[in-house]
Image (cartoon, rainbow, N blue to C red; front, top):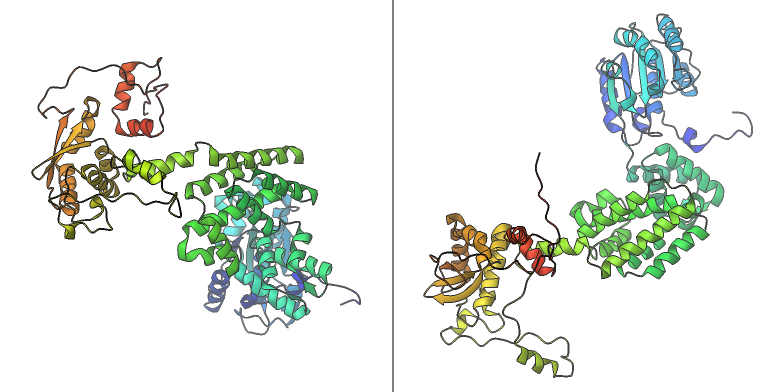
Length: 583
């Protein structure tokens, strides 16, 4: 080596044997076994993103096939013989590395086809490594087909590409395909730690995780970032240095932005954007960091025990993210990721992107004070469980007045009044600390009828969403022996018909027997009339429809319990009706 010549870390630490390749054991083990069993292919296709070991593995394979330390190909090349040394240095005349981007014409491939017939000069195999093979022209691929299918016994082709979809299927079918994976953060951190120990540079594990995340699974990128940090910092790398050198956004700022979104603090969000711009950070990268941050929150919200594996973050960071994720609704997190992903599309200028980002932050904060899709979804979920709607057994006005007049510590936090048990109700059946409908052994009377029916509806909705919705249409009217009488309006005939089905009746009656002590069935009627009473003529148009809407169509729409419930809960009205025709 010439005096003063410096070799970068990516070259200094380039693996020289299969066992040194990081994160690609599924490939190196297969190649070693194939060589050991003398099952050497004539064409290999290495596929994967940049900087994860494709060309390095090709060189190691070339050394394994031509190593002189053994009588034949060996899975563990010595690395010291003339062939191993010259192949590692890239000067072996029997191992030709060809750049597919600059040698992509049909004439270049014809030259390869003519030379491949010549026997190797000092090796067992003549090896052609064609990097970025997807950049060959169509004619060049066609010229390569026959040679790849039936090459001479001494020739081996190794094709490498980052874009497998651009390689013709006729080429892929003639090769053994190996898909290289992006390297995990733990493997990258372990490699960087070995390099730092050798270079006598100190840093924390937090720094290594930050480098690994910035490298995004690429070994060469991680080594290049580390090289840059060593040049900047000297013998000690701090966490702050990583963000300064790479132009990344500090996680503290992302945490502050998340908290501001949760608190709908628009001023803080705009100040954070101003700080990012003032420090010269790229807003496009900032948006990408935001997307990655909320993706991590989504993982914390949904992944359960696999969170550490999927995030590969220090424990204290995962705990902090878990705490913030618990404050979000799942639908809210998904919506935020989709909105920021839409924002990541190209903008003509930094100013345009800044305005778009600030507008989005204001909009997502205003969701807290506006009726949002998230609110609608949550209410519909509660509706399915029977938990939305007016509670018939609410506190009487007189009791509310009495409670409001009480001062002291209990103000604003008074518990609902306890009902006195019915005369025929045994105290053992309904404990003092439970409401009558909350106990599975409660006796239902006229006093607690509506509260008990709400409980039954909730249980039915938990088992069957549709059943809970239709039961919510019924109004409990009276108790006759062991049967509850349910009232329906003339516009609720669909609900009544649904509940009269044998399978639905069986399900409801089973819940009644389980959750009450004295009810075993139910009977339905319309507006207090007997079940056999004829249905009267239609009344005036529903009040939930706008004046310009056809009254008959509006009435038909409201017969659907889903539509009726939504209109009732959100105090809305039907303003238009469209018929959807399925193709």
